[in-house]
Amino acid sequence: MFPLTEENKHVAQLLLSTGTCPRCIYRFCGVDFHAPYKLPYKELLNELQKFLETEKDELILEVPNPPPKKIRLQELEDGIDGIDNLSQNGEGKVSVIEDGSIASKNSNLNVCNVCLGILQEFCEKEFIKKVCQKVEASGFEFTNLVFSVSFPPQLSVREHAAWLLVKQEMGKQSLSLGRNDIVQLKEAYKWITHPLFSEELGVPIDGKSLFEVSVVFAHPETVEDCHFLRAICPDCFKPAKNKQSVFTRMAVMKALNKIKEEDFCKQFPCPPNSPKAVCTVLEIECAHGAVFVAGRYNKYSRNLPQTPWIIDGERKLESSVEELISDHLLAVFKAESFNFSSSGREDVDVRTLGNGRPFAIELVNPHRVHFTSQEIKELQQKINNSSNKIQVRDLQLVTREAIGHMKEGEEEKTKSYSALIWTNKAIQKKDIEFLNGIKDLKIDQKTPLRVLHRRPLAVRTRIIHSMETCYVDEHHFHLYLKTQAGTYIKEFVHGDFGRTKPNIGSLMNVTADILELDVESVDVDWPPALDD
Image 1 (cartoon, rainbow, N blue to C red):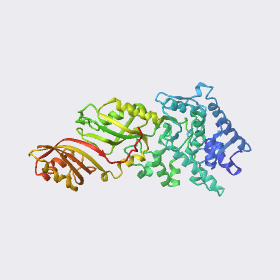
Image 2: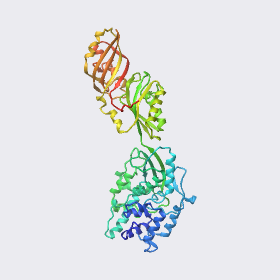
Image 3: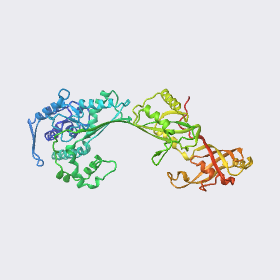
């Protein structure tokens, strides 16, 4: 059933005669069901011609500004033949030009003065196939996708001009047309292209998919269409660091909502002029949302930093916990980069024992994302076999939201340590036994000198929940501590020149230092333990 009614006939004639394509005519007539837009372009034009055939063969619209313009329906029909022959005529094909953009070599098409060819060439099967070829060549693994498009901002200006024209004509018939009555260009484009993409790629379009195919359109010929708005509404066009141009779609829409109709009509032609060429495609990009892998690691080396140790641009040690784990994940997931996080960190000379320290790795733009639990186990084993400095357990895929559990209430968590202590004075077993009875000792720690270059200066109160001692000899003993997370253990032992009070040295009235330190447990119940 043809979607337009007799009531729409005058608007359809008006728009067609000024250079508007059939699909944009449907949009301005408020056709909000999908089927009519999906018809091949030539068929759309033929249907529209039949609808209007009761009128004169030649439509003439007299508009004082710009001058009267004649467009023959037959010329429009002849022009669209070029699209229909895309697959047969090499000169008419959509092709990739030297700068990587996609343009049309078809010179016969009368380009729509509103959508600049978006709803003409760029929703036909020939173009969709070319996009799908790029998607398939990208090497991404996906079971659904989200399709996004970016249109030139001047399309909003041209649509505004066409709206004012139609609104004025409808007003003569005591009819109204609000901005919201027009079907949005992006909506109509997706109605047409989504089924074509699904059919070509064999997967559904899903707005929640992590795999995104994006197409960016441009139209250099009309790029200055927006510029008059900046002179009238300068507040709408403020430079932004991450934007190459002030003429963003949002800025243009803000200005269009602000400008008076009469001021707009003085500055921009209504109807808009017909362009010579259709849009070009600046880029077709494929990207996959990040995936997250979590686990726990043990560190057995006293010469291994958690993250790369670089001072003044010079690398100090050849590897790190982060790299020993992430290098394997990057290769298997075919990701571009990663971000490593953990529940706290240990110094380069500190071991992490017990059940390990929780960590999570964000893998950015991974090309492979589907793994069985057995494949993840094999990946864990590969990491563990590659180095005797670390071991990983409970490796698993997690969600972005789940990572929050690792950081929740981090400072309220407890951590257990064992340390080998040295004292300058000779001690006996009885000299250290009193430490066993101290519970929930509050200490004040000014930011340690060794981390002052990367941490703000502050005094932090921390709690030593319990201590247990084991005498070794007259200058050494083992100290086992359970503390609040975030406690600087080394400074609690030697005092950091009085910046941590009280400390082991002040409690025992000796000079004390720490020779070895091990993290025995990190009491964060995440990620879930897995069976071996």
